[in-house]
Amino acid sequence: MDTPGVFADAVALIRAGQTDQAVNLLLTAVPDLPAEEHQRALSYAGLACYFAERWADALGYFEQAAADSEVPEDHFNVAMCLIRLDRIEEAHSAWQQVFDLSYAHQDAPETSSFFEKKLMFARALRDAGACDARGLDLVARQLMGFFTTNHITDASFWGIRRVPPFEAVLETTRDYYRAMGKPESDWTAFLDGLAPEVDEEGRALLATMRDGYVEG
Picture 1 (cartoon, rainbow, N blue to C red):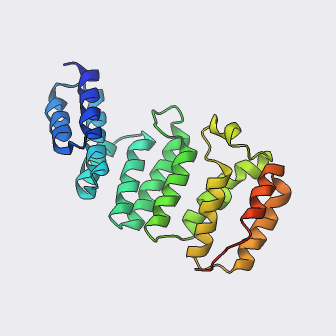
Picture 2 (cartoon, rainbow, N blue to C red):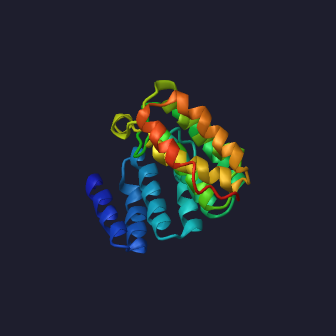
Picture 3 (cartoon, rainbow, N blue to C red):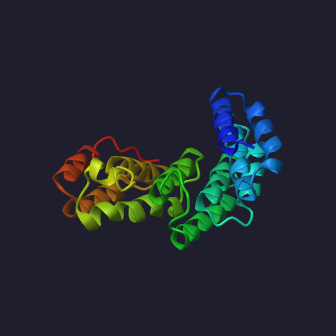
């Protein structure tokens, strides 16, 4: 079987919104694919359903792909889908798998970096109305540490290192502060703490983030 052709055809169908056709193509192909490609086929089937907002179907395929998998991205797909299904605690458990495996298998295949995944996961929780200290820690401490430790906020510098932009991390942190009902004084204190640790470009952005804070 032309393995690359199967996946290329599936991607084309997914992009065309032909979800069932893509899933059927992938599942029909599984018995004839090399064993090492079975998880990939299940992941693609999950993605087809995910993009079609068929969350329950997507989760089923993602969980099959993640079973016995040490690829962080397989578990990340599960975590993101669980958020969509409002199964927040299970999503955090899946994220812990992502966290652990990302350090243990740093050469695993991925379409987004571990750092990019942190922001995506935090934003998905925010969008689901599930902001708490765990999601806040991802952005306000773990990701923000790149900028405060290195004193660099330039987006191009961090882009080639696959770290999300300072502005995106800062805005998401602000969203968490608001959603968690933190007072404006806490937000201002947070910005004041960042200012000495970032560059001039970063301080200019901090100044713009002081106005318009609306407590949640």
